[in-house]
Image (cartoon, rainbow, N blue to C red):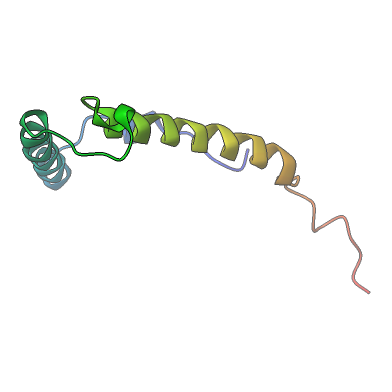
Length: 88
């Protein structure tokens, strides 16, 4: 197998990583809270819905992941792809 799975790397962050994770949470909350109280002025009526942009970003991210998985199946080559060919 090309990628070796190590369950220890999926543990909760500690030390410096935990600090930056908490900073990220605070920044996300600081940008979310004011957006809940502001009235959006969009070109289309559906863009004025609460949390529309967050939902749009989430759906777009999911679509990108699914497209990437599909493209990976199309483009991936076996591990020994280059070793099968003889040098000319």
